[in-house]
Length: 64
Image 1 (cartoon, helix red, strand yellow):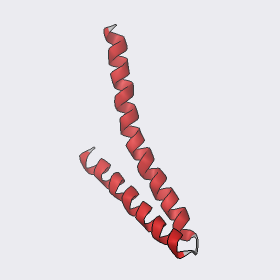
Image 2 (cartoon, one colour; image 1 turned 30 degrees about the vertical axis):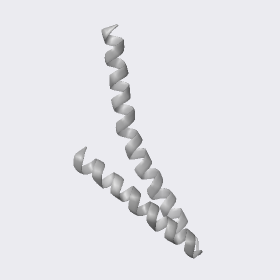
Image 3 (cartoon, rainbow, N blue to C red; image 1 turned 135 degrees about the vertical axis):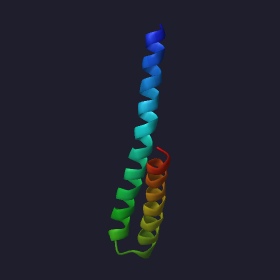
């Protein structure tokens, strides 16, 4: 029973750690794709997503 609880905690920690990195990567990729489109609204949205993704990535890098 204790090992099962330990395994669940390890999986939870692993998932939380990589979900933040995955979200940051997804936002950066989507922002880049939207920025490439020539429409002004998609470019603005793309820059916003890029900035949010970069901020998430940077905070994850700084604070682990």
